[in-house]
Length: 436
Image (cartoon, rainbow, N blue to C red; front, side, top):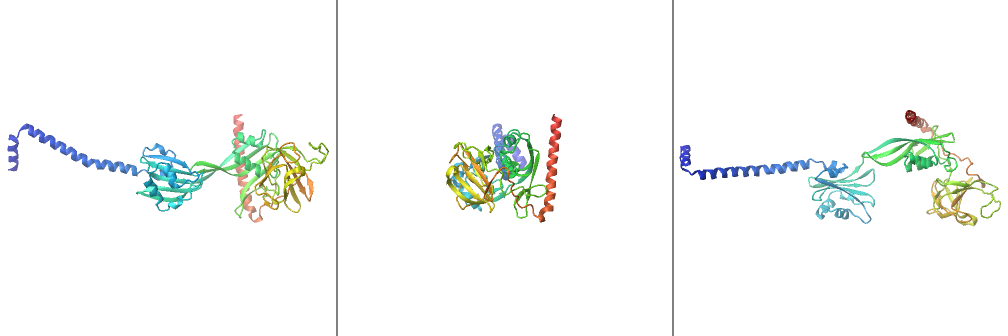
């Protein structure tokens, strides 16, 4: 009945009215569907953004590739605070306060000048993630999760990889090493390790060589610094010196020969790095200024003015001041039997004074030309039982060898490293032969 009534009314209804009703119905249906679908689009977009792991953004180098986020890196300057750093980075004050008021924000209170803070911000400059790099081993991270900042300390993933280098000396040990891409710090370590046996000023000859394995420190897959030399073989004038690093029970690490003899001696062979000998020990030398025959009771090392002078052994400063033709000088008493003397200093090292204790390798002064000197150099004397001795020829006493309780373990460690070094040398030699 209702259907017949609807049909009858429809037959008498004007066509243009029917068309208007039909179009209106379509428009209503379109608006309804649009309003229904729009939240779904927003939710989908929101879901897509939230699925991006902020943690991965912090540890990813190419942060700027993501259109939603931007990375910033700020070096901490003097008088900087977390607030001032974020403010200068363009972060809104409300957002800065949110971070500062978050739990564990005190972890970010002890930032140091020279360190860096890395930020990940969104298009509104809101901090999504913050990373403070304290040193290469650790730092602090702040991550935005569920509208709250989670702040915690972290430890970096540290890897140590072994690097092998082989160098034939042409000219200087230092320059030859740099040509073979041996890092500056590793060359200096090598000089220190062998400094008790080799005088790198007097003893080095063209054709001498050295091979070594050292560590490279990687943090999160990126090289951060050069580590320790694990083993080094130095061939000087046909004589072979092998030094092997070993961690002792007391926590210290020292270098030993393959047999367990400590390579460290009571005295360093030279008090100045990478200079040259301008005058040797000579009891009948003619003095360059006085022009009279006066014994030269030491060795003169010519070096650039201001070059550091190191104590060749542990001891106590017995004199620090100015004395006659020696100019500014330092005398060190090492034991009842041994003492050393350093003359013509431009100035003294920090806190060097009579009665002070000094350690082997410590800087006690700087090369100059005070007193009777024709130019900047160090006059160095070595006394045994109060008598002058030629520093280039005297035999230095050894330091204690490896303890008997650690000897067996050390010998296994030594054999392993020597085997590794020989394998590297064989591979390099084979490669050189194939290239020839």
